[in-house]
Length: 223
Ligand code: CA
Image (cartoon, rainbow, N blue to C red):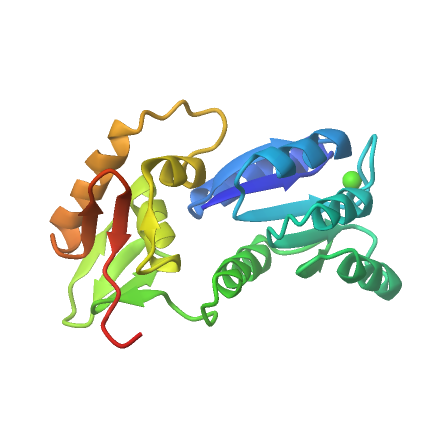
């Protein structure tokens, strides 16, 4: 899952980036409202963490601009200004959630995980498919028969990406756009490598290839 983190406090931005990467997000960062507005318009983010007090253009203004252009990416607004009327302003500008500074990272991570699921129409409970449940805290897959399979960072991100969109064909370019941050120049061939690793770990029938289109996570019949 790929995220944009907009925060002008360099120390906070760097520490948050590292913490968010550690819990399985590909993270792009920026520190002003003009760059944020641009990135949100051109990159396929799954989530945005947006500070309100930013240089050049306020976070609220950036958010209003995205919503006016039909950009529906889930946005969690992060700000030191925790007054109730500013939370109302944030929601009216199109925010999906709100967290006042200072905050515990665990709360931010939990809110983002719930937001990502809700935005794809899932209840905010563990993602599962074909007997496998994704353990997001430990970045592993657990089968109902008791098996637990450890996933590498990229395998975890890829499996979560598929589980959020079961039954949908995901192209290699979609997967690259949502698994890697902008600093990675990923080759589309690596996608096949990681899909095959997930198949070896979780079962070859879990992810089907649609030749010339991409890959699809099996969707149980009747859903
Ligand atoms: Ca700020």
